[in-house]
Length: 475
Ligand code: PLP
Image (cartoon, rainbow, N blue to C red; front, side, top):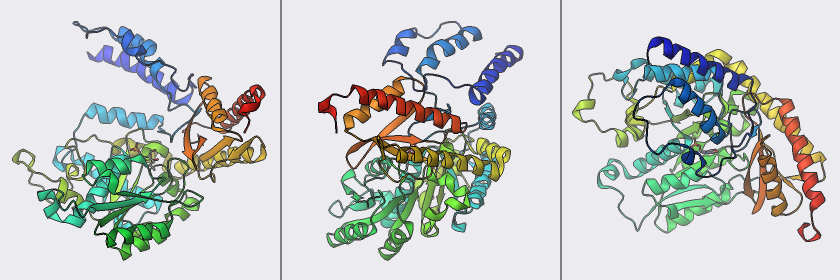
């Protein structure tokens, strides 16, 4: 594309993006596309001759957007958010335009040094342990970070030999420990690393869905007695289902006593540490070997942007550093981030995070997080005051898990009807074997009127469902 048509197309695109991220409230929030619908609308073969920008843009509008779920909508209350903001988009545009591959310090020194520096800013902003200073790296996702934490534990247990010979002693399996509420990425990591799914010990939780230290201790002792080799405890701070917090201090005691590594997965809740009043849950974090959270969930840096801190990066580089001649450089006292991750190539992700931190400042980020927490508090109060509903777990930070009093069928119907309306989008989970709706409030633009509107719609939909209820559907 030549300069002038490119600039014209960019103007159209940026105007659209500006409107999309600051004003629009697109509906339906959750795409109502049917499986196969987009593919059926696309030509079977690629165009032989290049097409005009106008036709590409028109197909983006007419074919692609209907298949989009609007994660950036202020009416998006599902899962955990992947929130973003306009300045983060500008960082992404520049990073994409530069198109650098920051695999080595030498392949773009700024990409490496900005990343280390911005992650040090996060250490200060979040009050993270000083041991993590200079030891941060951006990964694509919390899943990758947790996998790498497990890799470090495997490396520490087996030593360099493990990397050379592979996993041996299958009669003495490596075991890892996490709660029944941990994210599925822990199980996936164990499968990928050859530890084996069956060697993940899912430790029971208390009535607040937080890991029970006494059960953890018992499981480790049992495994040691039967010849297993315990390697890692993965604690979750802010579980996916209900935002429960595993108690780090007693867990760290256990990790120390048995010489296990301790990883802390705070994918969503990590951002809350920017507010000093939300730091209680992090007591004990100073004893962790690694910590991960997603600025792409609750700190407005567009997906993907996961922050991962390790106390001893040598455990990573011992496994991940493979240096053929074509990757050799003469710089010694530098970080080559290719040795801190699985792929070789890497995007310049810190640019958008740097833009976000500079644009909002620490106080601006705190204000948004406090607002979400206050809105969740308001929503939880509505549930408490309405006898038709009940809380399904203690509300925490920006998440409220709730149910209509009644059976799962009613609650499934409530969720389906709400989401089919297109006005908002919620998701669900299971807690204590019951179907539960999750109200997760973390979108950058979500304000009180959006949450009030959601509550009105929830109550009206519930009323309609309850009114139609037949006697055999009652609780
Ligand atoms: N860990 C926790 C506690 C999560 O809640 C999530 C996702 O919501 C993840 C890990 C996975 O995050 P990612 O999509 O970055 O891999």
